[in-house]
Image (cartoon, rainbow, N blue to C red; front, side, top):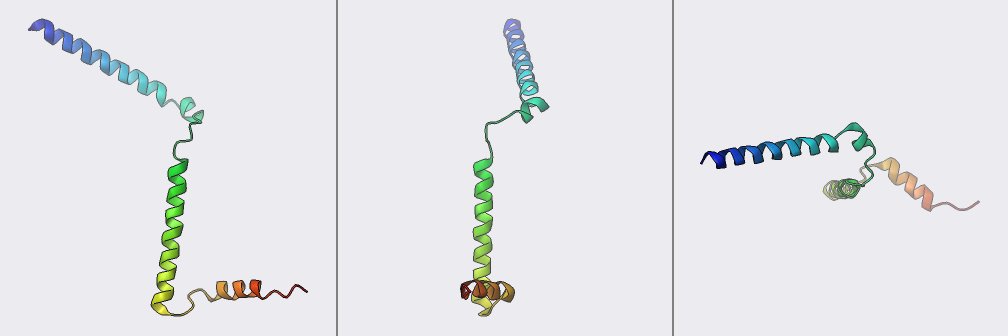
Length: 87
């Protein structure tokens, strides 16, 4: 019985030492700064895309709710762009 307790104790200690060693090597400042795996670019892009879509839906909802122009400056500038005579 004592043999198994010692064995479990040794295995647990070695596992913890290995986990600490791996963590220390993985998260050093040099390792973080030289990381070029590209993790997070897709999720950041998706987050931006979702926020733009939600903003557009909110603006469309406001237009439908109030039935009038919410941002008159933008509307006048867009109309001026399309009414350009070319002279």
